Image (cartoon, rainbow, N blue to C red; front, side):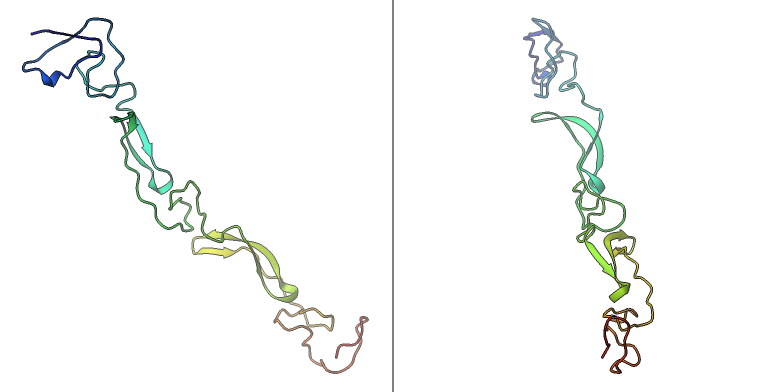
Length: 171
């Protein structure tokens, strides 16, 4: 039995016996509506259906195929779930940024006194750390600086004894 339908097509499953779609006008473009709009015998084979796609970003990215959805052709992949971000070269929290661990990029320093060196917090396999390397200590001098980098200014032997270093007495 052959049925005549408008160019919009028909739900072939609604007919009691197999039917062929014979549009009255030129076949319509296939859209995602549960109908065989283009009368090719396949329901919802709209442009792009079956092509590879990807959903999600970073570690949440998942492959899939384009499918017909309620609002047209969509990616049928289901993205993974985000995890806490860590320093591993991946976008674990799926926000589009790799290793954006709290504190990374902020200023930091290493060492004390004259040995203090400025740096930035960076990601390492062990987690965030300061990339600054403390300078080398030198013998303590009576100059108002913590030369030996122990956290105490002018604590050299003889402190408390008057002597001169060209900038006044160290007492």
